Picture (tube, rainbow, N blue to C red):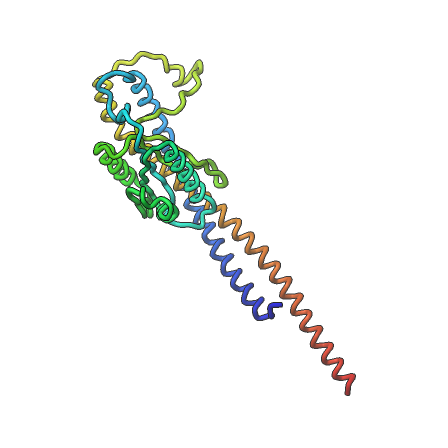
Length: 298
């Protein structure tokens, strides 16, 4: 049975931990609000650009002169997976869910005889995949958005991918990240970046933008020139949106994890305090019995 000194030490230790987790929860909550606003503000632009490109891609399908970013290389042998994680831990299952999906995707592609390459964003992703898949890691980036995530960082990542693609390094590129839904819910998302793969078409309605899906457009300059200009920009926009979603998901997961840790620390303090009081009472009772027994012996 632990002594009273040991129990006091454990209670002080758990209280110190509780203060740390509580402070981390408040910091994550303050960062979550800003990250959520940025992620939600970026969604409409990314979705509208994807819709415009999907319309242009539909007109260019099967026609000569289509950009390689749209039609691909004509092969499906080498896949580049962009795995977006965080640099810091203590975020619950945020990183684990992304790494689980990345491992599943790698095993699936290798079972089909495909060659896999990894571009990892975040220290946790690099450390988690280095042991099993270090041979296929092409590059890893850390401290992305350490102070505040900017579009320039996403554009730099897009340029790395484009240079590798233009050099014939891979045939298809996919990004894996967490899409933010709420502080308690993050959705692991797998999105194909190259070649361009439009999302499922929205259901047509009698009113609104969807009603214009069948409209006839004239483009100036030509569709080929517009696609050649927009596709690289779309790649940077989609990466930027994914990183914003990831940042909001990370802060939401960390806030939830630290809230649970704070409550668990409080429960542990209660149990230790109860054990301490019972042990202290037992020690006092034992001392009283020894005093009474000694007095009776005299």
